Image (cartoon, rainbow, N blue to C red; front, side):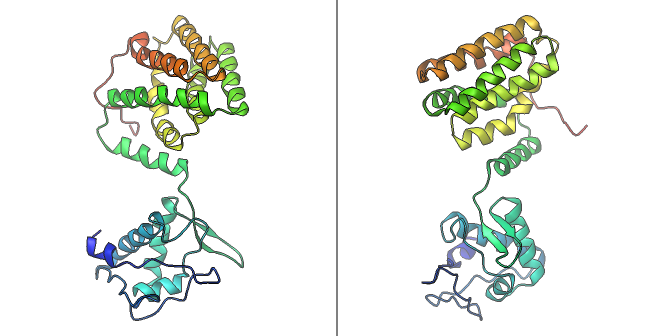
Length: 276
């Protein structure tokens, strides 16, 4: 997006009644006479430009979560675009999790906070679309999970502790079942990150978790190795349950950094193409 378009985009402000003001025509703003941006004459680019302008208003506070966007007709008038352009721009914002469409008498497009699921999907697409090395994912994991474990020790709730313990117990019962144990292994690690109550950590680990822990479905991940992993999980759980953030961080660091060595993994330079 060109900087001149961003600079001349005027924020949509609430009126005294809490409703958005009617939008002036002739590319004229309702508040201080500023001129609205002139979009590209290329109809194929207009929807992307409009989406970026509206996104900029949302993320910089011009529109707050829960507020309604102007109607399609008002957006058409303000930006001198077709209904199709407006609808495509709204579709882009919806795909990013920035708006939700409500039906009924008070229907319309409302500002929403992007969910962790939407962020995870974007990260997953980025990972799949670039030559990300498996070793890079391991490095991200080693950077995130020890800190997440420390935060979990500080901020975990009783429900978090119950969930982590439940997965620990289920993993113990599934010790002889490689596929089930591998799935529970992933869920246990995500439960630790969830207990940190850090949405950024959760978004990253949700995106890369399935790729990382697919390694535990290898034959090298035998019962003996799974027993070692389960013992490490129990010690990490005990530190988190006790609220000992230093021990939780230290034990998780030891666990994740020794992971590849325990499995005797030959890490490929790039991730496998899952589309094949």
